[in-house]
View 1: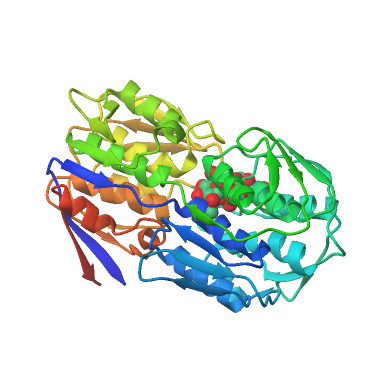
View 2: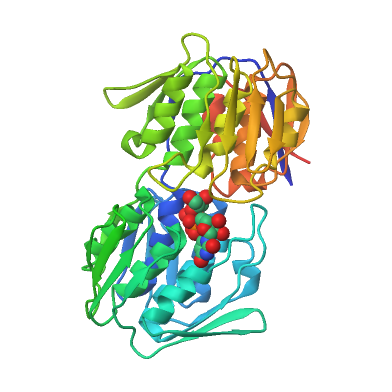
Length: 417
Ligand code: UD1
């Protein structure tokens, strides 16, 4: 297992590049199952979750390769309908193959994703929506087994705007008979990217990015070339890195529009964030001040930035609250931040953060992807040496993070445990 060693207290300065979006790439890779011609994808980040997805696609019978150029080519020519537990348990997003497999083959056997460090995360809404389109499900030996004749269009009102659920239903609907209307759909930019990819393959979709998505089923899709959007959470993490080190970063490929709620909050805290030419400049010019943050579905403040902004607030003036509105049990970074000297108390789904003058380095343990990012950020600001253990979580979702940070002045090293 690898860990990061960080000598904190250095101001970051320079240009930092954002990679392709993990959460857009995962559904798009799995949506390629819907297409019986080769699909060429660029800007696919080099991450463990992406490798897992390529492996899953191969197990499902697809050709799925990364070319020397970095582009990924997928050809879903000979499909098999089974996604085994060994793979699914390492990556919950595997459940996104359910919709595409049912649409293409009329059957799917996908291991039920197990418990997850950030709460129960059921998939009931995915199944309920697919049932409305004509699928039937049973649970056999820990696997979700789905069957259907040809899926048909349906009117679906989601109880909650689930991101993965909206994606699964859009994917299932593109090859269904007739029109599907998904109300209370999630509006995340990654859903827009998925829909744009599917449209490039010939799908007929409207309203993506709003809470009512309409999909008119077509007979078949054709191959295409598509560039994955930049990763808004990685970009947001680097904006916070500039703030927490009181530095100045020029962020390349920063999807500013998709980061509205994050940028607004960082500006309220006192950061300077503006597009200047082809980069977004993020700088902490004066003192930063704690604010109150509540995570919500898009366009609200993203839960995937909750841990990072908490790290920033832990060294800002005054006090503020961070309320988690999406996941139960997503505060595992709090005791670790406290080990670095942060003053945070928890009450239910709300953390009260009282800013301190400085954090001090310590050994801390990463518990999930975004918690890891939060601990790295805190380590960059802490006095002395911070060791972040179990960074395999981080490798799931941040491409070459230590190299990118080192290139803008951080003293950060990867070591074997
Ligand atoms: C996606 C993102 C993840 C992000 C999350 C919320 C990917 C690969 N992952 O996860 O990084 O943190 O959106 O922005 O894109 N729920 C149900 N029943 C369901 C589905 C969801 O109760 O059938 C609940 C979940 O338990 C959770 C909430 O809805 O409390 C949000 O989940 P969802 O929006 O589905 O998140 P994911 O798609 O899993």
